[in-house]
Amino acid sequence: MNTVDWHQFAHRMASMARDLLAQDTVEATLARITSSATALVPGCDAAGILVLTGTDARTLAPTDRLALESDRLQVRLGEGPCLDAARVAGGQRVFRIADLRETESRWPRYSAQARELGIGSMMGFLLFTDEEELGALNFYSRKPGAFGEADETAGWLLASHAAVAFSGARTHAQMEQALTTRHVIGEAMGILMGSRRLDEKQAFEALRRYSQENNVKLREVARRVCAQGTL
Image 1 (cartoon, one colour):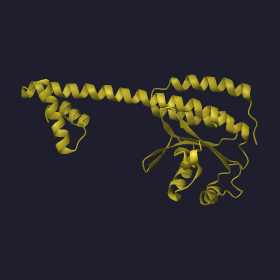
Image 2 (cartoon, rainbow, N blue to C red):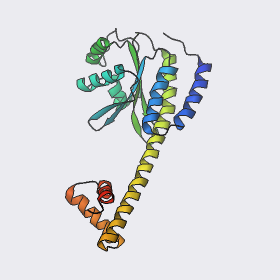
Image 3 (cartoon, rainbow, N blue to C red):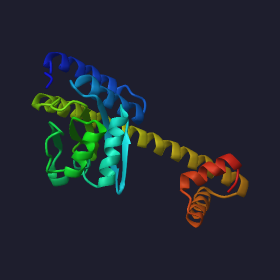
Image 4 (cartoon, rainbow, N blue to C red):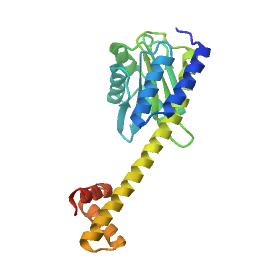
């Protein structure tokens, strides 16, 4: 089991928090989160973020194939600690498997096959804010007994900062997309108003009607009009 140097950890956490806010995209933010997991938590060989959307499960920013293979295994089996953390099964937001060589009654099928993947121990933390649950940040070690209580505390602190940065980056990206969509729709309306002698309301209605009749998103219809000059 490794020992956390809390003085060094605090300084590196502060640097990471500033760095997360400086990232330009959601993808860059997530990659910085997972790379920080392997850098800040002793014994962490790999990290990844599991996100569930309905029945769809995705592994984001894995630092090693180990994280990706673990998530795929859990999805295939329909059980596992990362799945439970991401969907807050039983209200659990944190988990730690100290030694996968020992019998794990909570996820017996996953544990047996995870050992074959080369996982010795693991931890996971729900990424959440007061408004939303974002997924699970998962830590992997190839060594059994790599994570103790101090490592769990370190992981929880990192995950808390990560959740705020992830949420903020996603909100920023959604706002940028909304502004871009609004601009494209406005440009498409202007084209239709000029080419078809429509007023603003009629131009928007033409876009909306085409979107509904052809089952194409409104922003995509607007992009086509901007590219082609017509519906």
